[in-house]
Amino acid sequence: MQLEELREYRSQARAVAGGDKGKDKEKERLNRLVAGRGDRHKDNRGPHFTRYIPLRVNRGRILDEALSGDLISLPRRVASPENADRLRTCQYH
Image (cartoon, rainbow, N blue to C red; front, side):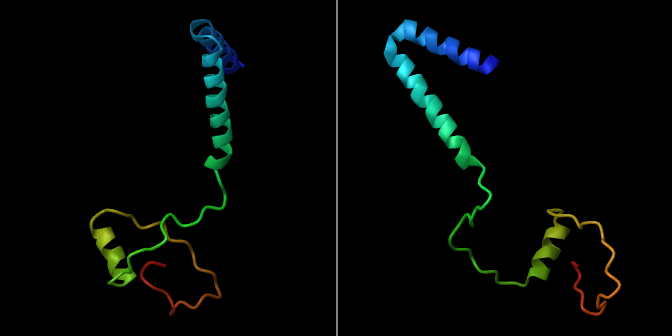
């Protein structure tokens, strides 16, 4: 409510200072802001880039380097399900 009152006050002050031209500009700016809000938070976002550089080493080595350089930390281990095959695991799962 206070924001609406502030906007109204600003638009009135601009109208007094610059005639109706300032009021039209304020309306256009507010319309752009309101229209842009719906586009900001989309649930279905695609990839940021269309092409990625292929990895030249395996992911295990990349993760080892990241761990040794303190870029990432290991997450807390989660208990495996009882029917899981314990022979088929990797270092990071």
